[in-house]
Amino acid sequence: MKSNIAIIILTACFLLSWRSIDNSEVRQQVVSTLKASILKEAAWAMQQQPITVTAQSCTRSAGGKHDFYSEGDYWWPDEKNPDGPYTQKDGLTNPQNFVAHRLAMIRFSRIIGALASAYKITHDKQYATHALQHLKAWFINPETLMNPNLQYAQAIKGVATGRGIGIIDTIQLMEVVVGMKAMQDAGVISKNDLSTIKNWFAQYLIWLTTHQYGKDEMNAKNNHGTCWVMQTACFAKFTGNKALQDTCIKRYKTVLLPTQMTADGSFPLELKRTKPYGYSIFNLDAMTTICQLLSTSQDNLWDYKTADGKSIKKGIEFLYPYLKDKNQWSYPHDVMHWESWPVAQPSLVFGAAAYDQNQWLDTWKTLDHNPTNEEIIRNLPVRHPLIWLN
Image (cartoon, rainbow, N blue to C red; front, top):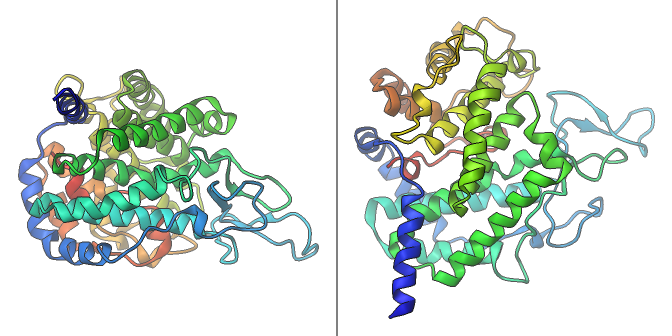
């Protein structure tokens, strides 16, 4: 009896910690738009077995079997010194770099997102039951779990065994966490399993906030700093870390919005990059996701404005015409993947819900909801918007 009461209390606290503003009307339209594709992807997910970081390894990694490893995307062998340190070609991805762990994490995110979305539509517990296999493999089973740090992410041969910049790779775990919340009332995850998984993320948050790599990423002035706040907010919400949630709210209000956005709503640091269109979209998606995660009726980030009038609404209004018609883009084209953007960006869904903007939602409906380009998928951590809407 005491055990059942404890589970009920734990579940109630978990759900209450995820309260957000009401998105019911947009949610209904999202369901009608995506239902067929959600059920199709969930059918695929039901056939997948867990694959974690332990399935593949790279001899260049300074870590062990359970350590996530990736390599800097824009780093290449030096033509004048092939065996020496890699050199940078900004914006140009080296296809020979090790990405197996990143792809495994994206696959994990897709599986949980699909299963959680299908559960939200059908309330069929089979989806939650299958999801639990993958959750245990990544966070609980000692043979296959991933260590809760990114010590060896985005390494560069001959230059660095890992970098703070690699922390952006775990934005893929956000839909895992949000998907768990969406399936919570299925009653499939035991108290012990939930506690163990929460502890994994609590340990990861400690690393994110105390290791120099985490501090470097937090202080990054562009989309990397935004993504540190976004994923930290998501994981802090999951673990019930109110102090860290408050830190993320403060950074959004006092650092991200005032220093990254200009008066017209654009992000100049992203516009200076070799892929200004894609990076502008990515940063806007990340900022709107922060607002979706942390807004409450008492502190609604969607309504927040800086003293000089900067707001997330202004950011969406700046980029929206170019999402609707990219031919209007007056800045340089991206050196890679220009043709693949935009897709069904979460900024349009979240913005439509926050500001009752039907035209933004109508544009979202016309865009690609199932991109296949790996670069786009990697930079689209919110691929299952249904599980993000209350």
